[in-house]
Structures are given as structure tokens and as C-alpha cells.
Length: 299
Image (cartoon, rainbow, N blue to C red):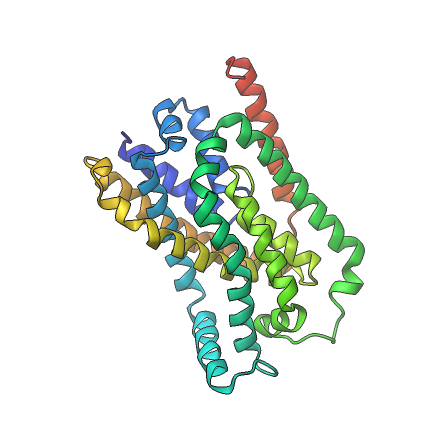
């Protein structure tokens, strides 16, 4: 079972950490361990439990917040997609090209997620695994920041790219690069690896700046998170959720609100700031949780 306090706190954590590049699943595992919520930890790694429905609702809520925040961009992308079906080309149409780039990037993680998400969650949604992968996540973020520091002239030349973020992403990315970014998302199936973080770093390596890499990451996360949630939404009405549906909905509402304000903040943050603080945070929090776990005799 889960209390309203636990559901609301986990909803808040999900809404923030799904978009901040610090891993939502990793934090839910580690904070449950820190607070001694052993029942939730056990449910997170079970093959069947109410917690799966809880995660589904939190993810759908997060995706809906992203849709609302980027509603104008999504309207452009959808129009561009249908326009490309009529014209049968994307050349010179940045909105249409971005639509197909997102589709190409969604396919790898979507297929792998459907097949392996359940297995990986039950095997790796454990404190020690989350600590290891969170540490790796921190190294990935720091490496990405270091890359753009040393290659900035190559990745961001003043006056050579469009001013609009959608146009810049379409200009910088090809379908091969989009697929690479999509493949990188697979890492987020491991608790401790951030979906937004790993896709941002992949975007930086693909020629995007921090702002455009973050926006492409958030746009790419939307269909993956929403699609996975909708497919598994029937689990919410299973017998496993009896007695906890109110808590699950409360957590979902908090996750949606937290996600909306998180993306609103991050969309501005990455206009002139970097991933380094988040990388250092991941290393520090992973180290702290390792010390706590050793002190408590959990490892």
C-alpha cells in the first residue's frame, strides 16, 4: 500500500526528476530507500503490483504537462506532418522534417521499451543498481558539457543557423542522428540513467546547442512517455489498485503540476546554462546514498 503523503511526494519527485536530467526512476528508488519505505521498494521491483499503475499515471501526467507547455510547437509539428503526407517531401519545411525526425527517434526506444522495460525494471529498480547508474549518468552529463566546451565553434557558429529553435533542430539533425538520439533513450530503462539527460547529451554530440538539445529532448520524451502510459493505462483498473486509486490520482496531479513548472524553468535555464551542475549533483547524491547504504548495512 501507499499513503497519500508518499504518493504526493513521489509524484513531486517524478514531475521534477523526469525532466531535470537526474533520473526519475533512480530517485524514486533511492529516496524510498533513504526514507525506509521498504514496501514501496519491494513493489517497484515486483512483476505485478499497484506500483506499475502508479508509475503509468505519473508518466501520463508528466507527458500531458509537456504537451500543454509545448502546445504551439506541437501544433506546428502536427501540421507539418500532415502537410508532408500531401506534398510527400520535407525539404524546406522545418516543421515537417522535425515531425519525421521525432518519429524516427521514437521508434528504437519504443520497441525496446515494450519488450524489455518490465524485465529491466524488476531487475534493476534496486538501490545499489540505481546508485551505480546514477553515478554513470553524472559522468555522461559532465562528458557532454566538456564536449561542447571544446567543440563550440563546430556546433554553434553565429549567423550560420536559423534563429527559431524548431528550424535550428531541423537544420542540424539528419535522420541518422535522430535515430542515434532515439537509441540513446534506451539507457533510461535503467534506474539512475536520465532520459532527458542522455538525449540532451546525444543532441550536443549531434550538433545542437544546450537550448535546442533540451527542447528536442523534451519533445522526444512526450510521445514515448505518453504512449507507454496509454498502453498500460488499463492496469489502473485492475484489482491490484483497489484501495489506492485515490493516492495514485493525487500523485498524478502533483506530477503534472511539478512537470509543467519544471519544463518552464528548464526551457529558460538551458538558453545560457549547462549540464555540469546536474552532473555534479548526480555524482554527489550517488556517493551520499552509497555511504548511507553501507552505514545501514544494506550492501
